Length: 106
Length: 114
Image (cartoon, rainbow over all chains, first blue to last red; front, side, top):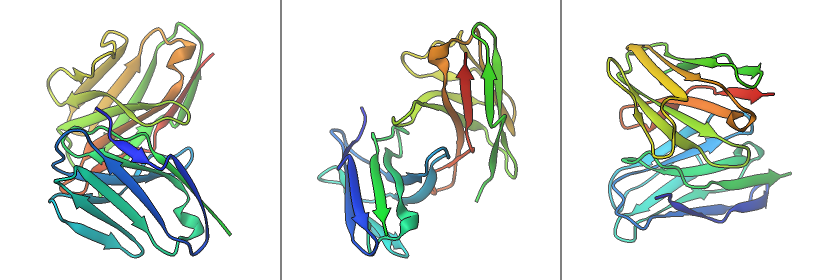
C-alpha cells in the first residue's frame, strides 16, 4: 500500500520553509526520502531507521514517528536548487509515495 | 556512493518490436537489482526484483512474459520489453540497495513506442 504524502504540491519563495509529510496505514520500520528533478532519476536524501529518529543535512532534515506511522521532511530557508518532486518510501517494501512537487521561486 | 548506469538513455522503437535496457553496477557487485517504471507526473512503480542467478520476482499486475528480466552476472541486469506498444512508453529506472543509504538509481531510460 502506497504511503500518503501531503501536500501534493507547494510553491515557495527563496528563503521560506516547507514541511512534507508522509504517513502509512501500516507499521513503518524505516523511511527513505528522495528528490527527483524533472527527467532524472531520484536521488537519495536520507534514511530514518528508528522511531523518534531525526536527522538532517545542511538545511534539510527529517523526523520519524514510528508510533504515528509518519515521517516529515523539513526544508529550511529553501533555495532554488530544492525544486523537484520529493518522495518518501517505505524501506522494507520499496513502495514510493505519490510525491510532493516543490517549486522554489526567486 | 555506488554508481549505477543504464543504457540506452532513451530509445524510440516501433510498435511490435522488442527493446533491451541494460543496468550495470559500476563499482560494486549487486546480487539484487530493482526495476521501476514511471509514467509522466506519476510516482515510481516497482515492476520487479532481479536476483543474480535466479528468476526475477514480479510485482502484481506486471506481465513477466512481456517484461523479461535477466540478471546473469553480479554487475548486469537487463530488462527486455517484448512486443512493445505505445502504452509501454515510459521512464524505466533500475536501482540497487545501498548499505543503510536507501537505493542507488540508474539515470533511467526513456522509452517511446511509436
